[in-house]
Amino acid sequence: MMDEKLTTSGKIMKDKHVNRWTDLFSEQMDVRLEKRKKLEELGSNPYKNGIKPNTHFKFLHEKYAGIPKEEIGETPKYHVAARVLMVRDFGKAAFLQCDDGTSRFQLYVNKQVTSEKGFAEYKLLDYGDIVYAEGDVFKTMKGELALNVREFTIVTKSIRPLPEKFHGLTDAELRYRMRYVDMIMNPETRDKLRKRSEIVRYIREYFYQNDFLEVETPMLHTIAGGAAAKPFTTHHNALNMELFMRIAPELHLKRLIVGGYDKVFEMNRCFRNEGLSLKHNPEFTSIEFYWAYATFQDLMDFTENLISGIAAKVLKTEVIKFGEHEINLAGPYARLTMREAVAKHTNSTMDQVNDRTHLLGLLKDVEMDPKKLNSLSWAKLLVLAFEEKVEGKLIQPTFITEYPTEVSPLSRRNDENPEFVDRFEFFMNGWEIGNAFSELNNPTDQLDRFADQAMQKEAGDDEATDVDYDFVRALEYGMPPTAGQGIGIDRLVMILTDSQTIRDVILFPLLKKEQFFSEE
Image (cartoon, rainbow, N blue to C red):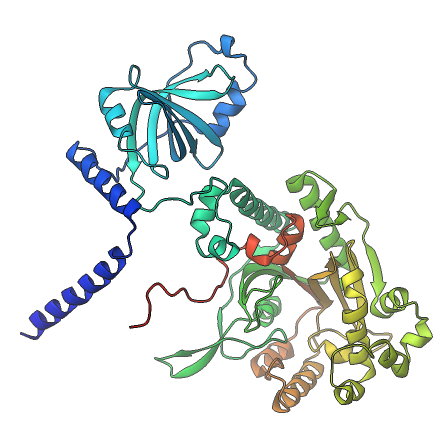
């Protein structure tokens, strides 16, 4: 009896969801549904399977574009499948503008040439439908390539009309929310995201060629560590414990160095509970790598070769444009200490940069509580001066070195000057792209710096890290001298593809939840 009640209740709920959705259908969608019904009456499944195209439009353009129409002659029979984006109907004939994901091409449907069943199906076509056609290539009187269709069928019936404007979605929010429509209507979107894939592939192959081992480390952490950031929290029911979404894989990767792997890398997602901006998405892709017996100096050479290699092999150019800037990726790249960069870009001397009062003067126009600003140490004032007065001016690829130890809790102190660490950040277009350092492998020093972070967290800094005692224990077994680096893939791809917002290079960026129905 209970099962029957549940079944009845479930069916009522199911019908409610289906009816609420279909009640939103437009008159155009109702017309398309009627055409779908007529397709079924013709004995044609409007959602076919087993379709096998034997070529793509890009190949047809490459093969026939340079041949005069009089010389094309008889061609092989080509089988193609594509989405119809525009229909020019002349009654007994029509040109269909189609896109198969590689390029756009015309199909020419003619009642005298196309099979009777195929032409009948064409009459039930709507733009947006996915179709299959067989035919031979020719050029029109205007010299445009087209496929003279012999057989034609609708493979997938599109119920929802594409945007009326042939140029695609114009509302930016809708473009990201309905990325699938954006990709249908805008080949530029597909090309940019394909370029991202090519860049990522090159990066992976670069690491493979340099004998790095690709690994996967946990996404769920018991301690939020590896970077200064506010984490996302979640709960594991079976273990009844709070967990954190990974903000960085650093501490697990360094455990692998302790365990005997000399070169490791991981390219994967990290999660930081921060605001949305043109350069930030809470879920982002990074690559982190660790190299035993290397120094941060080695990583500068390694990174320069990586970026210049992407330019040469993937982008096919040494000079790229981002907005109004031209960026030369060929190398060699500039290398400056943080103090040298502040001195250079604020017209200061090195002695002045070493003076706390001078730094306060440089920062007098910064939007910060004067009491809080005045309470900052020299090290934090130096970093703030760099961020506010210098960072945005580093358009060409630049390595910034010699960071204060106070702001680098996981970096190795410099042997000659322990107030600084062996670290660099890599900048392009005024943005930080990578962060690297010779790793701290002294467990006593590491524990002391973890304790400093814990003290800051206790004081209210929600980006400070907890003490990872297991990581300290790992260091006590001995980690060889190691250099490590993280590179933000999304931000790097933004620059390399001239994308003004991070949303343009992420397939499905985070957005506010869409409200499909009004509140009841």
